[in-house]
Image (cartoon, rainbow, N blue to C red; front, side, top):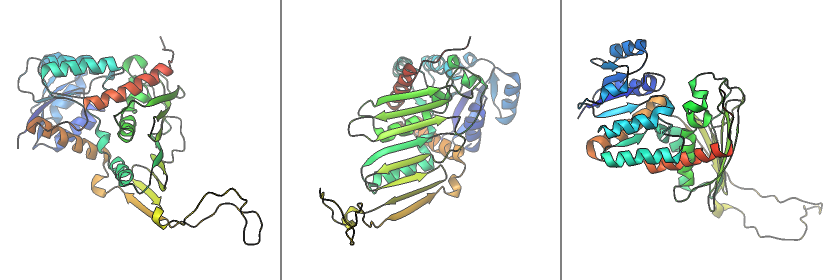
Amino acid sequence: MKQLRVAIIGQGRSGRNIHGRYLLSDPERFKVVAAVDELEERRVRAASEYEGCDTYADYRELLGRKDIDLVVNSSYSHLHVPISIDLLNHGFNVLCEKPLARTVEEVDRVAEAAEKSGKVFAVFQQSRYAPYFQQVKKVVDSGVLGRIVQISIAFNGFARRWDWQCIQDMYGGNLLNTGPHPVDQALQFFGQDTMPRVLCFMDRVNTFGDAEDYVKLILSGPGKPVIDLEISSCCAYPHFTYNIQGSQGGLNGNMKHIDWKYFKPEEAPEQKLISEPLFKEDRTPAYCGEKLTWYEESWDVPERQSDLFHTISGAYYSMLYKTLTEGAPLEVTLEQVRQQIAVIEECHRQNPLPKKS
């Protein structure tokens, strides 16, 4: 099995705690040979944690190297586009952290650079492989819930934030920080055949920055379910990650446990529309009532997948490894990410928030 030589730009929460952590766990396929960070203490730590790793203060010190199979771009969010384009122009395969961009125009510039370079360009939308999402999709695709009317997704909690990821100019805010994960999942249900209608409300509540920390997003379209998505940092009582309403039943659950129930139409009592008043046996007024046989099922995350970050990182990197070594197509495509950024851009257009000087 070929071992790919990897460079990581950034040794923060993403570069070290997600990418570095996973890559160290898979030495048969990956070896971190270079790490970039502007902070000396992080470079010293990287040199210690990744055996034989070179360290740099500036990513541009990588550009002359010819022995790197993949560069992971986990720099500041607002630098994802310019650094990715520079890497592609210098002939590197690139894996970029989310959010890729803030606008569709930025995505198109990256796509143009990737096409010209002939290199692989991937975006780290690893939550596509989350066990709970895969299970929800399996239930929906099975058809037991009937026609899906509404999909509610809530990535909610209560938190105050004061780091760079709540600054607009650094592409902060809940929609760009957390949003790429649930928006990507939502668009998997909505489909890529058409752009959804977007209705969005944002607010700045508990953050110390100038970006939003409350997002309510509604996606809709002809023949599509309504998708109601919340990404809130002011929800003290989060109740679910997914709640789905269908013509034959529904689903409710979080990232660890999911319940769903449904009836089978062929077993349901036959009914027909009537316009006359309804009566009970004693001729007192009645309401529509029938007895449906409900089938109830549940799912719990398997123990082997209980480490969510490691599970989804492993699945994504396995997919990317096949792309880099066998030429397999990417499962998370740039076209899909472009649709996601188009939705995010429209949300920002509808909710211009003042910036702090």
